[in-house]
Image (cartoon, rainbow, N blue to C red):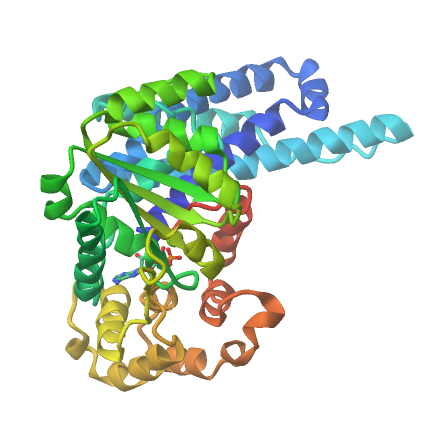
Length: 431
Ligand SMILES: Nc1ncnc2c1ncn2[C@@H]1O[C@H](COP(=O)(O)OP(=O)(O)O)[C@@H](O)[C@H]1O
Ligand SMILES: [Mg+2]
């Protein structure tokens, strides 16, 4: 799934880069004297725009419709090739500009041909035609820019299975219920733990639980991140509970709409990835909910202990998320490394796989990443090389990157490394 997300991120960022390239002064200048190329590129741009419009819809549907997944893969492949041609065009445009400035002429062979462009255009035409056949359409938040629909990516449970969190779920439900006795209108329970330990996954697990669906009238999920923007948070809550997009600009109006929507209702709210330690901001946010709602239960996920102490309703009620046990780690690893096949089908890899898992120190993100990267190479020598790699032992503080993540990046083929470069322009809400 993470791969699918990275793929989606790549496509959006590729399209943005492609449009920027086509609009650069050098390329525009260069195209002035080249009608056929200019015409083909304009057509190509229109095809890319059509594909971009349905990207969000396709990214969501790929999980349930294999044809859409295949369509996205084809679009991704074509995007790589288009990226290559556009790169060469931009290079040629720059070369011509520099030559014109220095008034030298080297008569180099043009690094691309119109027939190549025509072929690329035909390929994209097929892709956009199929997108109509698949019934892909524009959805709110579409357009494929940097602002990906974080709430849609995060609320459903993309994990095939959530391991070892049943007890955590029960403990948290108990904490939420124990506050009912005191008659508190608003109850906040923070889930605290380091990055990659599974806070968001646990929150999703709770959010999708039947008990929540049966107990609460309304649910909302907000990905908060470092930038604690109260207006944005409230707007996402309103959109979540009304299930409609909103273009409200005024804070007053927003607050009153939320109050109307919550009156007499029970709300289950997740605020994912909160960093803000400012108590006043938090109080102001909660004030909006003091509005005659029957019950409001809020789960906050955070890496920061201070945030947890500031937001929790009862000082003892933080939920510290622990690492997964060895056995849980192993099944999670096997799921990602061996896919649908059983680990016992690979007896020569079991012992070494278990040693690799131990190096992951119970962190699901690490296990999933390293398991996923080993999946493409089920060869004992390769696994031994990974186990012995010195990158495991580099202190985390030096690079601020978990060793396994660094390691899995290191072994990626170069075209995938490029994806990461594109991904780095995205906001931090991709799991
Ligand atoms: N209990 C679990 N079972 C299976 N996969 C998990 C579990 N916890 C986390 N993961 C996987 O590990 C990754 C990181 O988890 P996440 O919840 O995003 O961590 P955090 O929010 O603490 O940074 C996710 O891709 C998720 O799919
Ligand atoms: Mg998270």
